[in-house]
Amino acid sequence: MREKREVWEGTLALMVLQTLDVLGPQHGYGIAKRIEQISADMLAINHGTLYPVLSKLEQEGAIACEWGVSENNRRAKFYRVTAAGRKELERERRHWERTGDIIAKFFALKGAAS
Amino acid sequence: VKRIRRFLHRLVASFTHADREDFAAELETHLALLTEDNIRRGLNPAAARREAMLRLGGTSSIVENRRDQRTLPLLDTVPRDLRLAARRLGRERRLVVVCVLTLAVAIGASTTIFSAVNAALIRPLPYVDADRLVQVWETKPQAERWGDWASYPDFDDWSREARAFEGLALFRYGRLRMTYGEYPEMLVGVRVSPNLFSVLLVDPMLGRRFLADEGRPGQTDVVILSYGLWQRQFGSDPAIIGRSIPLDGRNHVVVGVMPPAFDFPTNLQRRRNRRTSESLSFRTPIAAVTTTVWSVD
Picture 1 (cartoon, each protein chain N blue to C red):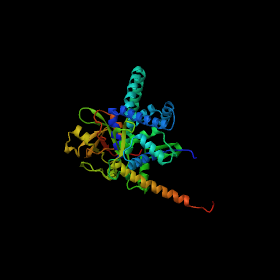
Picture 2 (cartoon, each protein chain N blue to C red):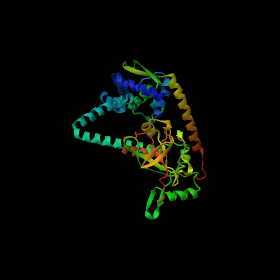
Picture 3 (tube, each protein chain N blue to C red):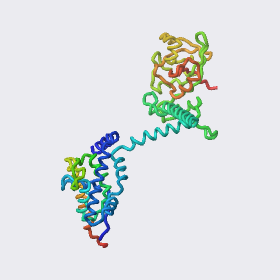
């Protein structure tokens, strides 16, 4: 199997937003777990790196949080996407799609040299 | 907007420190959930917890990073550094004195140099079409002398033959002994060619400019006074025009008085004024202007 990829800067925030948008309110652990699942364990998240991202998104107003109780009856912070966060997500999505399209076109080129 | 929002949040957080325990609890929950997960996967509780901690990556460093990220670390460290610096300086009195003096001298010097440069080079000359005014110097390569004042005969030649200029005027500043009133007085004066005012495009406030032939030998000596001198020594008397005053032992007829703003030659005046008698206040224009002494011996 291929080596697990590190998550690069900036994309993690996007994954968090998307995850929260799809699943609704989640705590940090849930988000980390979900991201790993979706990427079919190809991404290894150091769970610790998630919190700075969450904190930044929260300060930017893209997500909001409230305290709740987790599955194992512990106090946990649940994050959800705000309207501003959704807009940001939409913008980012379009950006990534466009980038992907462009890159795909380049890979589609079959040069005479190859 | 996002950045501003984030900055405000951080600013507030810097002073509140509210969520530190909350965050610890949040991490603890995360750790517990990870551990349980590991136990479900068949690890024993101790190993499960260890694995979870590895996965999370050191809670204390996370907490610290988070503090730096949520607050403005500068607000914390800058006052601390300042206090430390002040204490250190307090211990090194002598060094501090030397440093402060060095700074003071350096700042003073650069300020002085700047004001001089500003007056002489940066600020435009206070004349009409100042960008078309140039000062012409004489250069004698064989004597290795550059930037000499031109002699009168040279000036004469230039005036006749140079085609590059609309007009050429000559001036030379120097001292004038005025024996008027009770005590003789030393003035700063400029000897000029009669056309100077036509070249600079300025007119006296009272009286007239010099006439073209007033510079010739044998003509009456004439003088135009600065506003400051006229005001101080002659009581702003408009009847001064036509009167004679003795300068350097020769009688000069006053033909005009310059307006207060006239400032010539701008970059020389400040330096000169300081050395002459108290009679010239710091910003008054050059005192007396006279012709005639251009006799060619």
